[in-house]
Image (cartoon, rainbow, N blue to C red; front, side, top):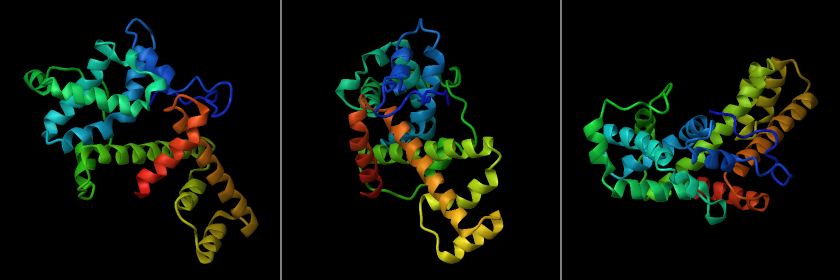
Length: 248
């Protein structure tokens, strides 16, 4: 993903304006040299939640993939991203509204006719979106509710991957792999002792290391959330919404 969650995106700081909204507005101007990488960043961030939404709406695997790819291309070509307004709701809400309009305009028929001839905006790596979609447990919630849930899960996955990359860059991959479960669960005393022994740390040093890991995770989560809202005062509200979606 294009680096758009930069250090200047400080929730509550003067650099807050340098969030994903800057990338969104850049993507809305085809003449901007940032347009192409900005759109790629958006595609990578929101591809799967939108793909899964289209699949849940009843489209086939091929149509859903083509439509999702074409949708982002349509946003750039029509300059409709430029209509996104940070003061009128979250960016994911803007995307979902535009996607519904896109589907209602029978773009699926047009894209099906062109299938195989279009350029992929984002080369997908690893598991395909459909593989991931099929592995998810059955869920009877509405497509809109599932979109929210998948957005939340995808956001946490991005934060986790960013944290993993930071530790890897510091040569601490083993440390991260050993302690990553501490981000989502509390270790038992026995597990903590085993981890401390394997890492060559004292019990106290292990507690400090886990505390720092969790602190950094929370910091990266806040920065990721800050990228999708219009002001620092909305970060806490969005975090509450995020965990409500995940636990609801």
